[in-house]
Image (tube, rainbow, N blue to C red):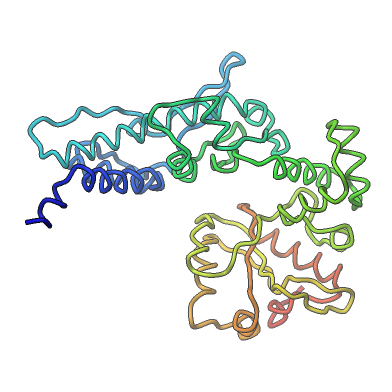
Length: 350
């Protein structure tokens, strides 16, 4: 009897409801749209592939507006009267996600306006979840729900890039890091941290110590001066932050075309200088390729040996010209380091 009373208690039901809402809030867009179709018995089904971004940012007469990719992400659905109470609660949760998503996206559009107009990461202003809630309050939105939703939402920029909203929430040190990266990328020469400090002061009126510059570089995995001097990336090409090559972490990699590199935790000796890079490759589906490395069977025995003996990470760069860029990266690597990466040594022809 006591057990039945516990199950029917308001507190227990409220806990289940909160867990259910949390799961709905963090669903990726494609999965969320499928969830809407399933829960509404196909009444909201559409032809074609569901979008993987929430909206496009469109300039109109000097004003930025949103073009929603799918109206189901914005719609407020009527609560069913004849259905079970459970069905009504799910519809309420769908409406809650749609309402909160719109609120968050419009707030980010306003706060990061300079970034949307320029497309430069160095124009992303520092912003924490707490600051956002203070600037754009919403009754049912807290830091936990905000964190779940921004991880599931993305917008298309004016130049066609897809940007996760999570990237637009940045600490002050990460903000410094993006500005430092911009200065380094735009320079034709490798810059020391002291050179970067001067550029920060003169170009952006940012006054920080060399020690903080070093810490910000490490936060964004920006190589130091000596490593950049031997960098094999063509100008304008930058790779993502390293992601651990384990199956769970690989889900953060997009199912898109690009090039990638595998890096070990310890440096490998090459004829000219050492490098963490052990392999350079390309794929039409980067996530699938990365997942393949986590399986048991791997044809490339050299890479298999590294995976067995070292903590290997993967970094990627999205591009439809993946085959051409892969060849260029391999050629540059051999020129800078004197050899191909260890894992590319078998059967490579350049």
